[in-house]
Image 1 (cartoon, rainbow, N blue to C red):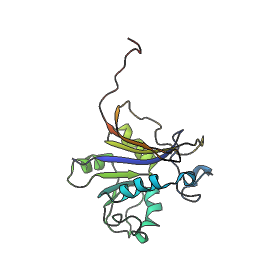
Image 2: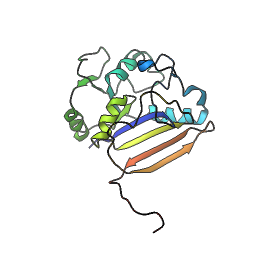
Image 3: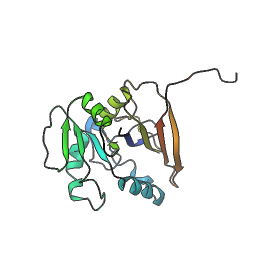
Image 4: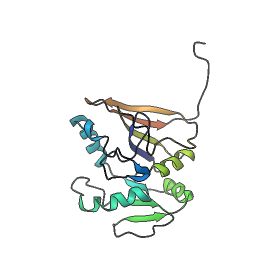
Length: 198
């Protein structure tokens, strides 16, 4: 069974929209594109390079895929395996792409079958609506988060609209010199409750 891993850059208030640049995703009149740029440092850069070198396939929403397809096919020098990994794209409207190793899927059942198949782990980058669908249906095995010391108040959020109650175990963490918390979490069962102090 393949692990499904969500990788996301997010603000303290959970916004994940357009961390990389002003024109990355302006939908909803979002005006803070590129909010992660001031926090770049060597430690964070090393973490990202390590992530990019891991063998993986990718599960993407249509909007994220369109952003990627306009950039990554010509920049494999930055991300060595991106053209070779299979890109599974969840879309009801898009059916084909010139980018090699791209497969379009339409249903949640297709994702469940993917998880049960043989192959590399499946990484989800960006794709806010898709991530929320995956969390709602308990399909996320790990969360690899980069939490930035900034709030934006508006924008697409990582955790929103129907996330199920779930417990995760922290498996790895560090804080960069610019204050970014980098944390990896693994799905770890059901929520337990109790009374503090008993």
